[in-house]
Image (spheres, rainbow, N blue to C red):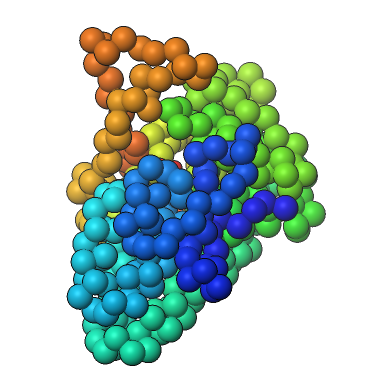
Length: 333
Ligand code: MRU
Protein backbone atom coordinates (compact mmCIF):
# COMPACT_ATOMS: atom_id res chain seq x y z
CA UNK A 1 0.00 0.00 0.00
CA UNK A 2 1.21 3.53 -0.79
CA UNK A 3 2.28 5.23 2.48
CA UNK A 4 0.26 8.24 3.64
CA UNK A 5 1.56 11.55 2.23
CA UNK A 6 1.07 13.32 5.53
CA UNK A 7 -0.48 12.64 8.92
CA UNK A 8 -1.18 14.51 12.13
CA UNK A 9 0.40 13.01 15.23
CA UNK A 10 -1.97 13.85 18.11
CA UNK A 11 0.41 12.62 20.82
CA UNK A 12 3.36 14.68 19.61
CA UNK A 13 1.21 17.60 18.41
CA UNK A 14 3.15 17.50 15.19
CA UNK A 15 2.76 16.98 11.44
CA UNK A 16 4.48 13.98 9.88
CA UNK A 17 5.43 14.41 6.22
CA UNK A 18 6.49 11.51 4.02
CA UNK A 19 9.90 12.61 2.73
CA UNK A 20 9.39 12.64 -1.05
CA UNK A 21 13.00 13.68 -1.68
CA UNK A 22 14.34 10.25 -0.82
CA UNK A 23 11.63 8.04 -2.35
CA UNK A 24 11.62 5.33 -3.43
CA UNK A 25 15.01 4.35 -1.96
CA UNK A 26 14.30 5.50 1.59
CA UNK A 27 10.81 5.62 3.09
CA UNK A 28 10.81 7.93 6.10
CA UNK A 29 8.76 10.69 7.72
CA UNK A 30 9.96 14.18 8.66
CA UNK A 31 8.44 15.56 11.89
CA UNK A 32 7.31 19.20 11.86
CA UNK A 33 6.67 20.77 15.26
CA UNK A 34 6.16 24.35 14.06
CA UNK A 35 5.09 26.26 10.96
CA UNK A 36 8.67 27.22 10.06
CA UNK A 37 9.50 23.55 9.57
CA UNK A 38 6.35 23.00 7.48
CA UNK A 39 7.26 25.99 5.27
CA UNK A 40 10.77 24.65 4.78
CA UNK A 41 9.41 21.21 3.86
CA UNK A 42 7.15 22.76 1.23
CA UNK A 43 10.04 24.76 -0.23
CA UNK A 44 12.49 21.87 -0.35
CA UNK A 45 9.91 19.40 -1.81
CA UNK A 46 9.74 17.08 1.21
CA UNK A 47 6.03 17.48 0.52
CA UNK A 48 5.02 18.45 -3.02
CA UNK A 49 2.03 18.27 -5.37
CA UNK A 50 -0.64 20.98 -5.43
CA UNK A 51 -3.28 19.53 -3.07
CA UNK A 52 -0.67 18.07 -0.68
CA UNK A 53 1.10 21.39 -0.13
CA UNK A 54 -2.26 23.04 0.61
CA UNK A 55 -3.07 20.39 3.21
CA UNK A 56 0.42 20.64 4.74
CA UNK A 57 0.06 24.43 5.02
CA UNK A 58 -3.32 23.97 6.74
CA UNK A 59 -1.65 21.83 9.42
CA UNK A 60 1.19 24.36 9.60
CA UNK A 61 -1.41 26.94 10.65
CA UNK A 62 -2.73 24.52 13.29
CA UNK A 63 0.80 24.38 14.73
CA UNK A 64 0.92 28.18 14.86
CA UNK A 65 -2.52 28.55 16.42
CA UNK A 66 -1.58 27.54 19.97
CA UNK A 67 -0.05 31.01 20.30
CA UNK A 68 -3.09 32.87 18.99
CA UNK A 69 -4.22 34.88 16.00
CA UNK A 70 -1.08 37.03 15.64
CA UNK A 71 1.09 34.00 15.05
CA UNK A 72 -1.51 32.49 12.69
CA UNK A 73 -1.32 35.69 10.61
CA UNK A 74 2.48 35.57 10.58
CA UNK A 75 2.49 31.87 9.70
CA UNK A 76 0.04 32.47 6.85
CA UNK A 77 2.40 35.02 5.28
CA UNK A 78 5.39 32.67 5.62
CA UNK A 79 3.55 29.61 4.27
CA UNK A 80 2.18 31.61 1.33
CA UNK A 81 5.73 32.62 0.40
CA UNK A 82 6.91 29.03 -0.14
CA UNK A 83 5.72 28.22 -3.67
CA UNK A 84 3.86 30.57 -6.04
CA UNK A 85 2.20 28.40 -8.68
CA UNK A 86 -0.19 25.89 -7.09
CA UNK A 87 -3.35 27.74 -6.09
CA UNK A 88 -4.37 24.99 -3.65
CA UNK A 89 -1.75 26.38 -1.24
CA UNK A 90 -3.40 29.82 -1.15
CA UNK A 91 -6.89 28.31 -1.16
CA UNK A 92 -6.12 26.26 1.98
CA UNK A 93 -4.36 29.16 3.75
CA UNK A 94 -7.31 31.48 3.05
CA UNK A 95 -9.83 28.92 4.28
CA UNK A 96 -7.86 28.39 7.52
CA UNK A 97 -7.15 32.07 8.23
CA UNK A 98 -10.77 33.07 7.55
CA UNK A 99 -11.79 30.61 10.25
CA UNK A 100 -9.08 31.81 12.65
CA UNK A 101 -10.18 35.44 12.12
CA UNK A 102 -13.77 34.45 12.97
CA UNK A 103 -12.65 32.70 16.19
CA UNK A 104 -10.01 35.27 17.24
CA UNK A 105 -9.68 34.05 20.89
CA UNK A 106 -6.77 31.71 21.54
CA UNK A 107 -8.81 29.32 23.72
CA UNK A 108 -10.30 26.63 21.51
CA UNK A 109 -8.70 27.97 18.32
CA UNK A 110 -6.25 25.12 17.88
CA UNK A 111 -8.98 22.49 18.24
CA UNK A 112 -11.17 24.21 15.64
CA UNK A 113 -8.31 24.74 13.21
CA UNK A 114 -7.29 21.11 13.60
CA UNK A 115 -10.86 20.05 12.73
CA UNK A 116 -10.72 22.31 9.67
CA UNK A 117 -7.36 20.91 8.51
CA UNK A 118 -8.71 17.38 8.96
CA UNK A 119 -11.76 18.40 6.91
CA UNK A 120 -9.55 19.77 4.10
CA UNK A 121 -7.63 16.47 4.06
CA UNK A 122 -10.77 14.30 4.01
CA UNK A 123 -12.51 16.47 1.42
CA UNK A 124 -9.45 16.15 -0.82
CA UNK A 125 -9.54 12.35 -0.67
CA UNK A 126 -13.29 12.32 -1.38
CA UNK A 127 -12.82 14.79 -4.19
CA UNK A 128 -10.20 12.51 -5.77
CA UNK A 129 -12.55 9.53 -5.54
CA UNK A 130 -15.22 11.61 -7.34
CA UNK A 131 -12.66 12.66 -9.99
CA UNK A 132 -11.87 8.97 -10.53
CA UNK A 133 -15.55 8.03 -10.87
CA UNK A 134 -16.22 10.96 -13.22
CA UNK A 135 -13.18 10.28 -15.40
CA UNK A 136 -12.85 6.54 -15.70
CA UNK A 137 -15.56 6.33 -18.37
CA UNK A 138 -13.35 8.34 -20.74
CA UNK A 139 -10.85 5.48 -20.95
CA UNK A 140 -11.43 2.49 -23.26
CA UNK A 141 -11.77 -1.05 -21.78
CA UNK A 142 -8.17 -1.82 -22.70
CA UNK A 143 -6.11 1.32 -22.32
CA UNK A 144 -2.52 2.45 -22.75
CA UNK A 145 -2.20 5.67 -20.76
CA UNK A 146 0.66 8.11 -20.15
CA UNK A 147 1.00 10.45 -17.17
CA UNK A 148 3.55 13.12 -16.27
CA UNK A 149 5.02 14.16 -12.91
CA UNK A 150 3.14 12.77 -9.91
CA UNK A 151 -0.56 13.50 -9.64
CA UNK A 152 -1.18 10.49 -7.47
CA UNK A 153 -1.73 9.60 -3.86
CA UNK A 154 1.63 11.19 -3.00
CA UNK A 155 0.59 14.58 -4.42
CA UNK A 156 -2.71 14.66 -2.56
CA UNK A 157 -4.44 13.55 0.63
CA UNK A 158 -4.71 10.11 -1.00
CA UNK A 159 -5.89 8.21 -4.14
CA UNK A 160 -4.71 10.93 -6.51
CA UNK A 161 -6.19 12.97 -9.35
CA UNK A 162 -4.69 11.78 -12.68
CA UNK A 163 -3.57 8.50 -11.12
CA UNK A 164 -6.94 8.35 -9.32
CA UNK A 165 -8.69 8.18 -12.71
CA UNK A 166 -6.37 5.30 -13.65
CA UNK A 167 -7.13 3.57 -10.33
CA UNK A 168 -10.88 4.05 -10.83
CA UNK A 169 -10.70 2.68 -14.38
CA UNK A 170 -9.10 -0.51 -13.10
CA UNK A 171 -11.64 -0.74 -10.26
CA UNK A 172 -14.36 -0.68 -12.93
CA UNK A 173 -12.77 -3.69 -14.65
CA UNK A 174 -10.62 -2.04 -17.34
CA UNK A 175 -7.18 -3.28 -18.41
CA UNK A 176 -4.59 -0.54 -17.96
CA UNK A 177 -1.03 -0.28 -19.21
CA UNK A 178 0.60 2.73 -17.57
CA UNK A 179 3.50 4.80 -18.94
CA UNK A 180 5.20 7.44 -16.83
CA UNK A 181 7.46 10.25 -18.02
CA UNK A 182 10.44 10.36 -15.69
CA UNK A 183 9.81 14.13 -15.34
CA UNK A 184 13.14 15.96 -15.28
CA UNK A 185 14.66 17.50 -13.26
CA UNK A 186 13.22 16.12 -9.99
CA UNK A 187 11.98 12.78 -11.40
CA UNK A 188 8.51 12.83 -9.82
CA UNK A 189 7.34 10.49 -12.61
CA UNK A 190 9.93 7.74 -12.22
CA UNK A 191 10.57 8.05 -8.48
CA UNK A 192 7.02 8.71 -7.27
CA UNK A 193 4.31 7.87 -9.84
CA UNK A 194 5.93 4.68 -11.13
CA UNK A 195 6.61 3.60 -7.56
CA UNK A 196 3.07 4.15 -6.32
CA UNK A 197 1.51 2.56 -9.41
CA UNK A 198 3.82 -0.46 -9.18
CA UNK A 199 3.02 -0.80 -5.49
CA UNK A 200 -0.65 -1.03 -6.46
CA UNK A 201 0.15 -3.79 -8.97
CA UNK A 202 -0.17 -1.85 -12.23
CA UNK A 203 1.75 -2.75 -15.39
CA UNK A 204 4.15 0.23 -15.37
CA UNK A 205 6.79 1.46 -17.83
CA UNK A 206 9.00 4.51 -17.27
CA UNK A 207 10.14 6.55 -20.28
CA UNK A 208 12.40 9.62 -20.56
CA UNK A 209 10.43 12.81 -21.19
CA UNK A 210 11.87 12.97 -24.72
CA UNK A 211 10.38 9.56 -25.64
CA UNK A 212 6.68 10.47 -25.47
CA UNK A 213 6.36 11.35 -29.18
CA UNK A 214 7.99 8.09 -30.25
CA UNK A 215 5.78 6.15 -27.85
CA UNK A 216 2.66 7.65 -29.43
CA UNK A 217 3.90 7.19 -33.00
CA UNK A 218 5.46 3.73 -32.83
CA UNK A 219 3.60 1.90 -30.08
CA UNK A 220 0.31 3.74 -29.76
CA UNK A 221 -1.35 5.40 -26.81
CA UNK A 222 -5.04 5.83 -25.90
CA UNK A 223 -4.82 8.76 -23.50
CA UNK A 224 -2.62 11.20 -21.64
CA UNK A 225 -3.82 12.20 -18.14
CA UNK A 226 -2.10 14.86 -16.06
CA UNK A 227 -2.87 16.91 -12.95
CA UNK A 228 -2.93 20.69 -12.57
CA UNK A 229 -1.43 23.27 -10.24
CA UNK A 230 -3.64 26.19 -11.26
CA UNK A 231 -6.50 26.35 -13.72
CA UNK A 232 -7.43 29.74 -15.17
CA UNK A 233 -11.02 30.76 -15.82
CA UNK A 234 -10.61 30.13 -19.58
CA UNK A 235 -9.19 26.60 -19.07
CA UNK A 236 -5.49 27.36 -19.60
CA UNK A 237 -3.61 25.60 -16.82
CA UNK A 238 -0.21 25.38 -15.17
CA UNK A 239 1.33 22.01 -14.40
CA UNK A 240 4.78 20.46 -14.09
CA UNK A 241 7.25 21.59 -16.75
CA UNK A 242 6.91 19.37 -19.81
CA UNK A 243 3.11 19.19 -19.68
CA UNK A 244 2.70 21.75 -22.47
CA UNK A 245 5.01 19.83 -24.79
CA UNK A 246 3.14 16.64 -24.03
CA UNK A 247 -0.18 18.30 -24.94
CA UNK A 248 1.25 19.50 -28.28
CA UNK A 249 2.57 16.02 -29.06
CA UNK A 250 -0.74 14.40 -28.06
CA UNK A 251 -2.66 16.71 -30.42
CA UNK A 252 -0.30 15.91 -33.30
CA UNK A 253 -0.88 12.17 -32.77
CA UNK A 254 -4.63 12.38 -32.12
CA UNK A 255 -4.28 11.15 -28.54
CA UNK A 256 -6.89 12.54 -26.08
CA UNK A 257 -5.29 14.81 -23.47
CA UNK A 258 -7.13 14.92 -20.13
CA UNK A 259 -6.56 17.09 -17.06
CA UNK A 260 -7.75 15.72 -13.70
CA UNK A 261 -7.97 18.18 -10.82
CA UNK A 262 -10.08 19.10 -7.79
CA UNK A 263 -12.12 22.32 -7.64
CA UNK A 264 -9.49 23.74 -5.27
CA UNK A 265 -7.10 23.90 -8.29
CA UNK A 266 -9.38 26.38 -10.09
CA UNK A 267 -8.46 30.05 -9.79
CA UNK A 268 -11.28 32.00 -11.35
CA UNK A 269 -9.54 35.28 -10.51
CA UNK A 270 -7.01 34.41 -13.21
CA UNK A 271 -8.56 35.06 -16.62
CA UNK A 272 -5.98 33.20 -18.73
CA UNK A 273 -2.73 31.27 -18.35
CA UNK A 274 -0.67 34.39 -19.08
CA UNK A 275 -1.44 35.62 -15.57
CA UNK A 276 -0.23 32.48 -13.75
CA UNK A 277 2.99 33.01 -11.81
CA UNK A 278 5.54 30.34 -12.73
CA UNK A 279 8.03 29.25 -10.07
CA UNK A 280 11.69 29.19 -11.08
CA UNK A 281 13.71 26.86 -8.90
CA UNK A 282 17.40 26.56 -8.12
CA UNK A 283 19.72 25.78 -11.05
CA UNK A 284 21.20 23.02 -8.87
CA UNK A 285 18.19 20.80 -9.65
CA UNK A 286 19.26 20.75 -13.31
CA UNK A 287 23.00 21.17 -12.84
CA UNK A 288 23.55 18.13 -10.63
CA UNK A 289 22.94 14.98 -12.65
CA UNK A 290 22.18 11.50 -11.29
CA UNK A 291 25.41 9.99 -10.00
CA UNK A 292 26.65 13.41 -8.85
CA UNK A 293 28.04 14.55 -12.24
CA UNK A 294 27.93 18.35 -12.40
CA UNK A 295 27.28 20.71 -15.30
CA UNK A 296 30.07 23.35 -14.94
CA UNK A 297 29.03 26.51 -13.09
CA UNK A 298 29.99 28.79 -16.02
CA UNK A 299 27.18 27.22 -18.08
CA UNK A 300 23.84 28.91 -17.46
CA UNK A 301 20.78 26.90 -16.44
CA UNK A 302 17.09 27.83 -16.70
CA UNK A 303 14.77 25.91 -14.41
CA UNK A 304 11.08 26.86 -14.58
CA UNK A 305 9.21 24.29 -12.48
CA UNK A 306 5.92 24.61 -14.40
CA UNK A 307 4.56 25.54 -17.80
CA UNK A 308 1.19 26.68 -19.07
CA UNK A 309 -0.87 24.59 -21.47
CA UNK A 310 -3.51 26.45 -23.53
CA UNK A 311 -7.12 25.37 -23.07
CA UNK A 312 -7.44 24.47 -26.78
CA UNK A 313 -5.10 21.50 -26.26
CA UNK A 314 -7.24 20.02 -23.45
CA UNK A 315 -9.66 17.31 -24.63
CA UNK A 316 -11.52 17.42 -21.30
CA UNK A 317 -11.20 18.48 -17.69
CA UNK A 318 -12.10 15.83 -15.13
CA UNK A 319 -13.04 17.42 -11.80
CA UNK A 320 -15.03 16.43 -8.73
CA UNK A 321 -17.91 18.40 -10.30
CA UNK A 322 -17.89 16.41 -13.57
CA UNK A 323 -16.31 16.31 -17.01
CA UNK A 324 -15.98 19.57 -18.97
CA UNK A 325 -15.11 20.12 -22.62
CA UNK A 326 -13.99 23.21 -24.54
CA UNK A 327 -14.92 26.08 -24.35
CA UNK A 328 -14.23 26.23 -20.62
CA UNK A 329 -15.54 28.80 -18.20
CA UNK A 330 -14.54 27.99 -14.64
CA UNK A 331 -16.08 29.91 -11.78
CA UNK A 332 -15.29 29.75 -8.05
CA UNK A 333 -15.16 26.51 -6.09
O1 MRU B 1 6.86 20.59 -8.17
P1 MRU B 1 5.79 19.62 -7.77
O2 MRU B 1 6.29 18.22 -7.64
O3 MRU B 1 5.02 20.10 -6.56
O4 MRU B 1 4.79 19.65 -9.01
C1 MRU B 1 3.63 18.86 -8.95
C2 MRU B 1 2.85 18.86 -10.19
O5 MRU B 1 3.09 19.60 -11.11
C3 MRU B 1 1.64 17.96 -10.23
O6 MRU B 1 1.46 17.43 -11.49
C4 MRU B 1 0.44 18.80 -9.84
O7 MRU B 1 0.68 19.38 -8.59
C5 MRU B 1 -0.80 18.05 -9.82
S1 MRU B 1 -0.91 17.13 -8.33
C6 MRU B 1 -2.40 16.40 -8.13
